[in-house]
Image 1 (cartoon, one colour):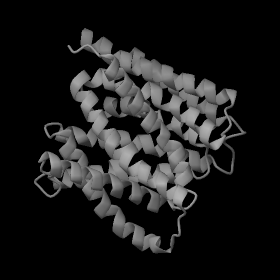
Image 2: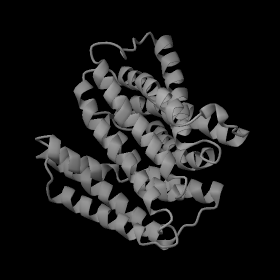
Image 3: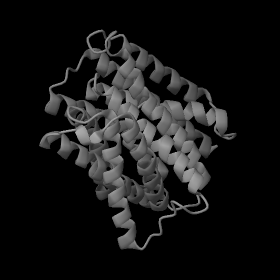
Amino acid sequence: MHKASLKDFILLITLAAIWGSAFFNIKIASADYTPMALAFGRIFFAALVMIIYCFIRGIHIEAFGENWHWYATIGLVNLVLPFFFISFGIVKVQSNMAAILMSTAPIFAAILSHLFIPDEKINFLKFLGILVGFLGIIFLFSDDLLINSSNIFYAFMVILGPAFYTLGGLFSLRLKHVKNEVVTSSILVWAVMILLPIMFIFENPLDLKPSLGPTISLFYLGVVATAIAWLMRFYILQKNGLVFQSQVAYIIPIFGLIFGYIFLQEKITYKIIVALIAVLISTYLIEKSKKSKTST
């Protein structure tokens, strides 16, 4: 087994920082872009980068091949819906809180895996991890300073993001024999085709008059936080394996908290810290339960 080098750890932390930076950039972009336009712009720029990357590397994009229906389904569930829900929810909630809510993905993964994957049943450690994470989020929702009657609906919208990410991940198992770059580029192409007509049906993006700052944030979200981050994830995954790469989940909400405070002067209450710790413990317990199962 490959032993992670200093370079590998730097790449992992960089990836976490990029994904953690997405939240405050979504907040900035949402000032001038509607949630649907924001989701589309992010997907469009990411698709453009991946198409160029695949062309340079000679990788064939299979968006319209025999697996087109899976690419379309995953594009909808794993990109269009979560990007929209996160962009919609973050309009009324702090970006640092959104980062913590997003880090509930391992909890959804543990629950959905138990329901749909025969050899991924919930054991004691997984149950304990789910319970700790759930209690942490409940505690966060009790923070009247950050979540109240005016934005609780938006907070639940953010939580739908990791729920659909996880569901999309389950669908992606159908394509585990296909290269990651092919899957990513193909689902991005379908996501663009799905969201473009929907956006023009429900709103007119041509009426938007965005300023430079939100537009830069939108470009960053598509190019850096989506396309380049996914390519970095591929590299880390191939070189160091899934267990090493999955550790990024511990670091993302920490960067989300720090960036929200630095760039947006967002409040950090003690309940945010307690919820963050609970979610990190939850992620650790769920990941540890997988390792324990592997070693038996």
